[in-house]
Image 1 (cartoon, rainbow, N blue to C red):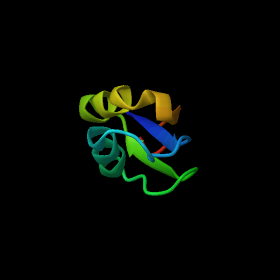
Image 2 (image 1 turned 180 degrees about the vertical axis):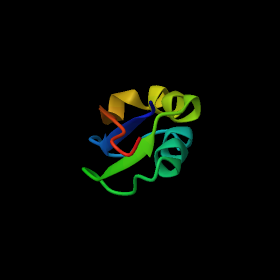
Image 3 (image 1 turned 120 degrees about the vertical axis):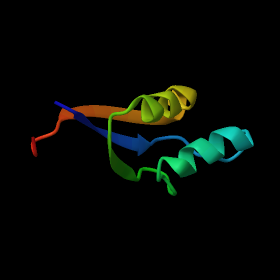
Length: 65
């Protein structure tokens, strides 16, 4: 059973390294306090780990399965 991750950008990208900005953009986050829902994969988990200090992550079980 896969999990859905709800990821919210909680801190601004201003003054952050370009690598952090690229990771946040690739997660689909563009503005502060916006939330995206993504399936849990090793790739997504690695990206979250890189910028975890700027994000808030909630785990939910996927109801579709």
